[in-house]
Amino acid sequence: MSDDNVIEVRREGPVEWLALNRPDAHNTLNLALVDALVDYFEGLRERHDVRIVVLGAKGKHFCAGLDLSPDAFADIERSTANTLVIQRRIARIYLAMRKCPQPIIAMVHGAACGGGFSLALAADIRIAGESAKMNAAYIKIGLSGCDMGSSYFLPRLVGTSVASEYLMTGRFIHAERALAVNLVSQIVPDRELAAAAQDYIQDMLRTSPAGLRLTKDGLNIAVDAPGLEAAMAVEDRQQALLSLTEDAREAGLAFFEKRDPVYRDR
Image (cartoon, rainbow, N blue to C red; front, side, top):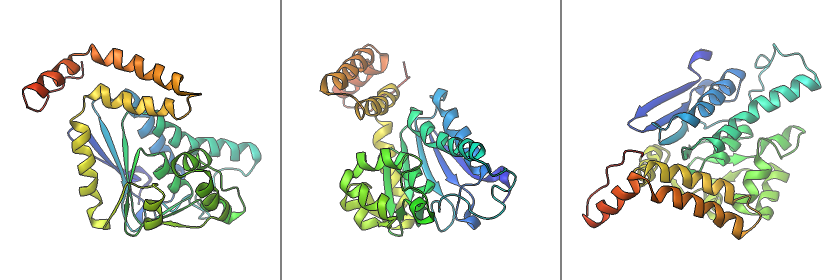
């Protein structure tokens, strides 16, 4: 597989379907894939024509983590400084996923390990295929289980006790347990992942474009807000702004006229 084709992006109206495309390497993260994902997600910040992103992968596995093959990082001299540069280069993926205004739906099948686990964690909604299994693989190779946002994302999603269980052991979270601890929204046969994602897409596309963007923004802020008043201050600001838009007026008319609204993102 050429480094020029490590991701595949398919556009369907206002939705982009992004697939990791290194199936022969189990979609492990090499430098080409890291840079492609950073460029893609950072580029979404000003792309309001894209309303939703669906993240999946080609082949048997979602993403088996960092590419540990001998040639993957052979061109980089081993040193503390270089290691930190690469670490922060990879970390940009997850920061960009949270900062982009589009909701991200992750379709997880097969293994999602290490950095691949964090790709799922950084998404807004996770759907698991029946084959899905996820783990913080870092601790299995002499490192900390806290990496690529895992120590931030996982406790907020499943609680500190369950997060500690998995980050401290490197155990796999299989699909059934992931559903039981609310890490994923549902489990479907692997072949039905795209159809399951489509259900969420249809509901999101019935919302106003700005309303959807600011909902993700509000959730991001509220999760770290110091208290209820701070969270509600953000809500108040956003609702005041949105209530004056043409789309809010259109949504009200459509409700009373019993029709679907026609949004213009104004």
